[in-house]
Length: 427
Ligand SMILES: [Zn+2]
Image 1 (spheres, protein in one colour):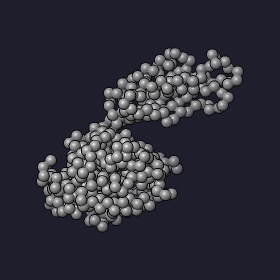
Image 2: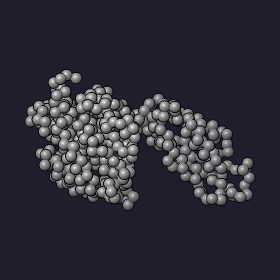
Image 3: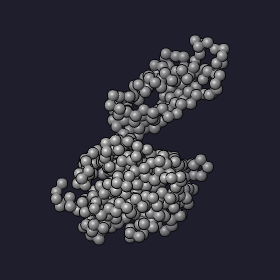
Image 4: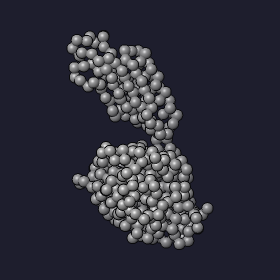
């Protein structure tokens, strides 16, 4: 990195106001806040709309241009005085919707760190050639309406509005109805065209895992999102009386399923502890204490950064299930219910973030994401990378979620430095 480039990036980072960012995290968490620091702000709810209005107030205060789109995303743009006409913006953000039992950092941090970084670059009065823009993607979590990641899914062309609007919440409200009243709650916003080019996308997020804290680090560059495959396994036996049926005469779906679950897990685990294998649902039918189970359904959430390893494991799972069926006495079927391949972020952008860590006196560090994020959809067509900050004990999707003010500020400074550099580039 040349000296000319280092200097403006450091100036932008130094303009980050960590106290304002912290204050805004607390203020935003009042929308849907419960208990000591929990947040329930599900997509297109009254709380989500209130958060959107607060973001619009802060944008107006800073003189940013606000836009929306039919998917309910919110874009806040600053066009520097010297920007080349038609230059694509550098985009940064995340989401402000939360899980029902969420915290104040998951998503909201990326939006507010993006806003703080933009304001810092603006305050540093650098001769930027392209606009900077902050985005709050809609319905990332997918807890109220499935699927999730609908805002970034629509912008990147992976989801159409029909699919998004068809989602149904637990009370029978369609996503389309909720989205319409959400959009009506902030009337008059100009529309951002779906195809508008994006120069680069950066997303800051809490790690949602324990690694950074364990390493004693505040922030890191993220280079990959691991792939996720979901499976559903069904074991079919025969219901029988628990008192009168000799063991040898049973087709006990639980016994077969329990042995199979242990066998599949043993196949997946590796010495490096890279593979993630989770059986999160295990349903025994009919679920009566004195009946031999006739059916078991269980799910597997399998994650790994290498697509080849995921494919090999899927094949091994299928073979193992077929062998279990051949061995009898139960029928066994397995199917893939969801498949998201691993995503590699833009190597040059990842390197640039690592350079900024170093510039700010933090250790260089890169890691992969265990969770899915809007950034993984952006990565297909736009140079994309993420910045992770440490969170307490790796706790997330939990009201206890916490990140220190120090980590919160560090991530925003890395973001500001990177945004400044990207905004200064021509072409
Ligand atoms: Zn998130």
